[in-house]
Amino acid sequence: MSISTIIFWVIVAVGIFFVVGIFNQLVALKNRYKNGFAQIEVQLKRRYDLIPNLVETAKAYMKHESETLEAVISARNSAAKGLAAAAAQPGNATAMNSLMGAEGALMGALDKLNVVMEAYPDLKANENMMQVNEELITTENKVGFARQAFNDQVMAYNTYKQSFPQNFFAGPFGHREDASLLEFADSAEIQAAPKVAF
Image (tube, rainbow, N blue to C red):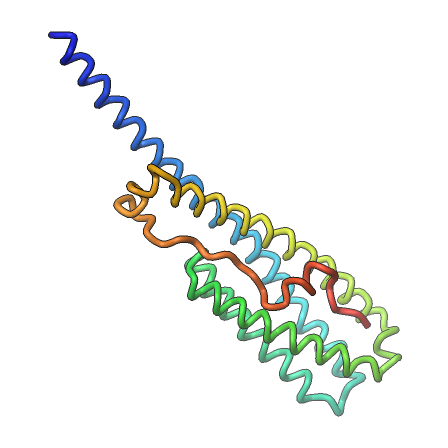
């Protein structure tokens, strides 16, 4: 075997290892952002599970505010559906936009509920309400941290995928679309502090 043949096969082997490395890194980064979304899903489901407790506690005090309470439950159910769609396709732009819109509507309904609750001092002092409030605040903080971790993983995936020479291989390897960040419409308010106060 001649030296030129050996060099040719070494170059081919290095090229194959290089391409396999790109493929494996794309898969690893995609799996990381999917796992990051799974952490968001856990925290949002926890929040969605707390909202009916909040409404049930408030019902006893707010008999004349059934429309507000129903709006919160309706927004919660829409957000849960948006989460299910996004969980099926983490990073998909349409699914992320749907979830962001549903979350915005839910936060708006909760804000309206908070304004109405200000007129009920006994409700604000209720032990169950204070406990649900504390759990919601803790969950909101966890959602914020999980969302930041997810967005960091999405950014790492997109940056790697768009970089040279990976951008030549990403499409043929099944990584055509960039992953979408999860940004809520009121992200500045969410990052500042949770708005659930009784």
